[in-house]
Image 1 (cartoon, helix red, strand yellow):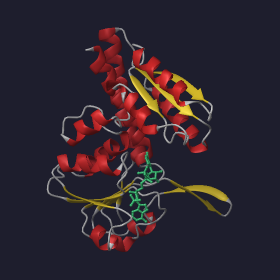
Image 2 (cartoon, helix red, strand yellow):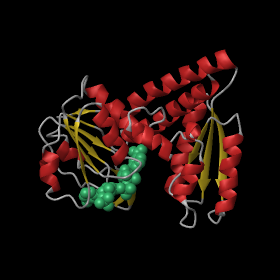
Image 3 (spheres, rainbow, N blue to C red):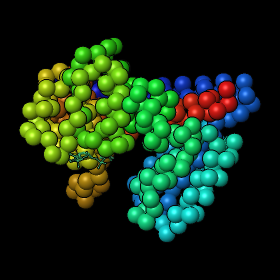
Image 4 (tube, rainbow, N blue to C red):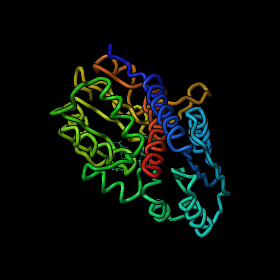
Length: 286
Ligand code: NDP
């Protein structure tokens, strides 16, 4: 049976690091890192994510500034709020929960956040820095995945890494990080031919598709490390249940290590957001 990579446990260590940074900043600068969270609309999943992020931020001693806007908020109003947060010295990190309503230009909003306050790491300047290997604010989910991989492997160098999914928030930045770790990286997606065969070559397999249970045990190389980013809500016997992109029961018979859903990448993502917030504050204060 595969080793189960405990995201909750690893996340609590990252949160301890973030809390220690907060104490250091308080001591040296008499300043508490501030995280502004902006939620537009009433998407149920986004509300849960935002609530969890704010709860953990408070636990780490980070000040949170919450902005809940109606779904029909105009682009101009949101632009003005971002400008206000950019100008506020008490706000070191700005998180705009995605997705935004369709009438809002998401790319324009992301680009309008000051890169040094972009704790999601989605601003083009931060994306470019990551691809050049000099980023300070790295997208939270891939950052969390990398911590999980480093927990299993002392050295990732030379390993075949296959990432299934090519989104800007997970797949692409994950590829950049693993390339920096000297992995041989393949990105697979919905147009990849014989995707099962591609996955079978992976020493490291990252699933980030939003396709529940896509990755079956016969896609996995024996002893591979499997990180399941997917969060999919399904109904089982009338009950809502969260599952990943990987068939966990089957995969854990073949893999060497595997992250569960829930309790895997999800808690790591939040912990890395708070780490990014303390980093952003440190960069702005020092
Ligand atoms: P996107 O929808 O933006 O991207 C999904 C990617 O997966 C696309 O590149 C798509 O290919 C590919 N894909 C979808 N279905 C298949 C398939 N059947 N075979 C091969 N490739 C496929 O999703 P995100 O990257 O935003 O999120 C992915 C998953 O991760 C979701 O379940 C999301 O909820 C979860 N997530 C979890 C987080 C966490 O903290 N744990 C954080 C962020 C996301 P193509 O480009 O060709 O369409």
